[in-house]
Amino acid sequence: MKYKRMALAACALLLLLSATNLSAVLTDEHPRYHQHLERPAYTPCAEHDGETLCTHLPLVLIDTGGTEIPGVPIQSGGSGREDDAFTTTADGSTLLRASVSVVDHAEGNNHPADTPTLQSVIDIRVRGNSSRYFDKHSYLVKTLTDDGAASRDVAMLGMDAFDEWALHGPYLDKTLIRNYMWYNLAGEIMDYAPNVRFCEVLLNGVYQGLYVMTETVSSGADARLKLTEPSKDTVQTSYALRLDRGSGNEVKNIEAFSQYALRNLQDMDIVYPGTKWLTPERAAWIAQDFSDFEKSLYSYDYDTEPYAWWEQADMSSFVDYFILNEFTCNYDAGWLSTYIYRDVRGKYKMCIWDFNSACDNYSHPVTEPQHFELQYNVWYYMLSKDEDFINAVIERYRALRQGVLSDAYLNDYMDAVVEWLGPAIDRNFSVWGYALDKDMISPAGRNPHTHTEAVAQMKRFCAERGAWMDEHIDILRQYSHESKNKKFNH
Image 1 (tube, rainbow, N blue to C red):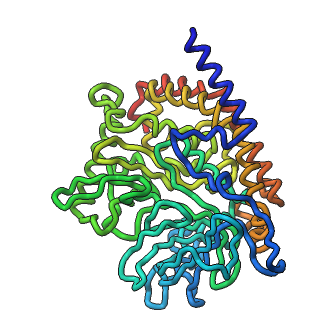
Image 2: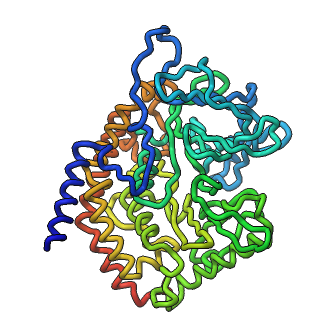
Image 3: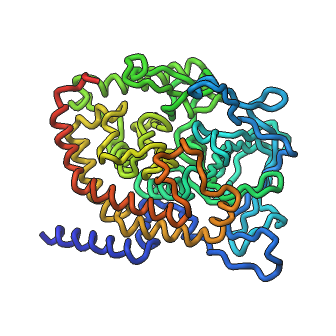
């Protein structure tokens, strides 16, 4: 009884802190750098006139010499995008050689003419799937040595040094903060979520708006997933996989059990190890190793020791991934932009990615009627039949609703980020405005007309979704019970 009272008191204290002091809730259990909490807010400079770009955010200055960055869609005119092509450089390359300068002074403001804190040769292209079609482009940036002959690890905006970065330009998301917010909250509760930093971008001297510099899902000696490096003595290796539309590099594309058994109609490719280590033999070993896991997951013994799925997969990682994507109705998860990884020393884990369409920002409403979705998607189809998994989801959800998923915490987080961004918000919308193509989000009434309205919509969604899940989370037990003996009806 004594320990029960102590636990209840601790929960009450955590909720109180969440409502009163956002930064106080962030623990050292999962250290996470929240840029808006660590960096000073904007204070105007007195030394120059209002014509000079003056910002407390880091500046990323990209110089292509006036050449267009490749990767822009060339639409075929058909009903879909399957036949669309993408622009290349004059010599047919998908990457353009360019340069980047970063102005990121921790104290005080940044200006385009300030001394750069980082300069690098880069290869760059437009990135994304649906987002390639947005007016505001996002970019893949690869940092190179000065002669451009090899990759170069750099500590971009204070993040761990690596040679590949995703420069995400919020466009569909009129709050501008979805990826920044949900990546950071995921980083508080999961083993890993990509680190993110807000910045403002100039392309060939022209202001492009607010961006989010993002770690790509990969592994480095001192960065990101921290997977063991391949050995030349064996094809066995740690690896990370992506469920999406496949890679343009054929050696990366694999066919696993869920694909040839028609339980998954998407493509899968290897994102780690990279091409330096990815021989056809190693790719074949990865495909077989992952297929073996999927076969065990779809077997009669999937929840029976010693063959149970949790012997190969980290249950807590799959639980947190399920909760975060269900809470936000991020229903590309488990279908597209889905990452799973495994170190040879450990178990499979999940990694979140892309909340651009989350929180009812999808092209069509996904929260009417309210429902749970992920139990119908690939690996979760089987996991959700396991009563132990469902019980873990429910218990973990209840705990998170007293912390990072509480209404008070989420509202405080949104308010704090928006306040810190300050004038950068208006600068961004002075370039891109609020209008979207009519087919991006429907019905039209769901399109916000101001940034304040966009944030209010997301707050309202989180409150309504949380209240619905509070009341209905136990339905998952019923689903698990009813489907327990229907393991193979897919």
